[in-house]
Amino acid sequence: MASPEKKAFLLRIDPTLWAEIERLAAAELRSANAQVEFLLRQALADRGIQPQTMRKPKPVREPEFVRPVKMNAAEGRMNSWDEKYGAPGHYYGTEPNDFLRERYAVIPAGGRVLCLAEGEGRNAVFLAQQGYRVVAVDRSPVGLRKAQALAAERGVQIETAVADLADYPITPGHWDGIVSIWCHLPQPLRAAVHGQVVAGLKPGGIFLLEAYTPAQLRYGTGGPKSVDLLPTLAELQMELAGLDFVLAEEREREIHEGHGHAGLSAVVDIVAVKR
Image 1 (cartoon, rainbow, N blue to C red):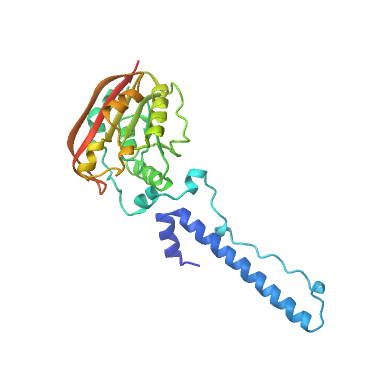
Image 2 (cartoon, rainbow, N blue to C red):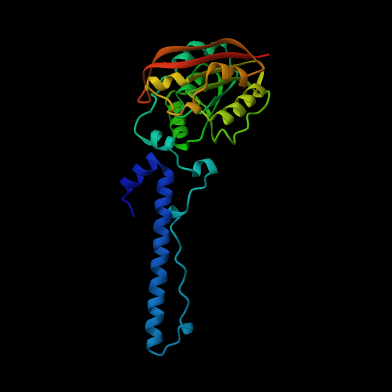
């Protein structure tokens, strides 16, 4: 078994990995006990002692720490985002996205805000600091644990939900604001999520989006490498039918966010309001 220092380190970077190590250790212990019992029975049989006369050994009780931690389906799936967010520090930094910082005030003050694909929480925490009631959803439990830690460090509270957006229901007519910063999804899923975004906003609710466009592939300064994950403005306008666009533009701008985004980038920005 690992030393307390190694256990603490593994729990800090990835509790799911530690749970798997403990499960395997318990399995090895059970296997060793079964082998010892078999050899003992064989030795007694060689001496003319019937094995059934042996007193049944007491079952070995596994220590509490080897019992697997309960987690939902999304938490149980390791993914590349867990690996990114499991590294020391914050992959995209702790400061909010520049576009969000410039535009957030159009969301009704003090309202409920849903942050999609929120990762390590920098944008959700910033919005909570401005007085919003924030729910951050992401498929990475590792990222969302960092989000909660960042919120505590800055003296605010956020709610987090570990979920894949393919499975996460956006409550209709519930949100004063929905924020999508670098939420890159395959086109069919993106269209479905954006349909829920339109339905999920209250009348007068605001949708803020910044994403990389296909032109970003020429820059290589961040974002997905597949064109299917990179929306155009025209595609977004179709998917968000039912919203009025206050701002809708494709542009180039400098982006510097932690290790993940660095340099001149091709983006699309949207500020839209529910009719």
